[in-house]
Image (cartoon, rainbow, N blue to C red):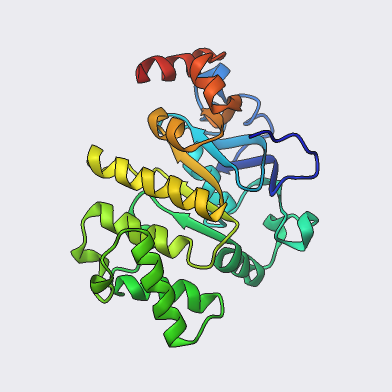
Length: 283
């Protein structure tokens, strides 16, 4: 899949930066891969990510890979408004035709974007599901927040999504607490795609799952993405996951992009020493 058009993007990220603590003017310049640290030696501020630039295209799956602490989860949490960015701009084609920096939206408009135009699947299902609701109730919650109130339509949509994600419909009224980890993730995926959003984030969705369960969840994600044409940003420390799901990949280290390109090219001919290390650990 080729992505060349200057005007064909769905999401455009420029200069995205998140700093924890009180930085000094040189905090960004004194951290990163060349310093082997994301902690400012002068102020102690943590530069989680800095100066992140990329575009995401309609129907594309973009991988974000890096070790623990590289900033990859922070990146998607900023894009999903779970955290506030320190600086940078994010344009999203679904909002004002891509003319407005969505980081500057009011909280009300941000909620609208999250409920109508985005979905998130977290590493820990407890972050994305309400364990006091039934599995069907979790999907209903997403639909209600997006303005769907007809009970029959909600239950019908929930039944359809659970079937699509291989969750037995007869268990729709059970809480996720009674489900296996893999089934909890499938309910979370159902909730994330309930409103047919153009953009879904997946943050380490197979971590902690048995290998056989991982494979089924990844197959499910790939099938749903292809059928629905959803753009996805997939965060993982596992290059096997990245290889299976993504078209392009960004490699993060100490909060900076050290390499990006087509996934196949990065896996077959990594250029940066850190990427070479990651790929060699996969072989």
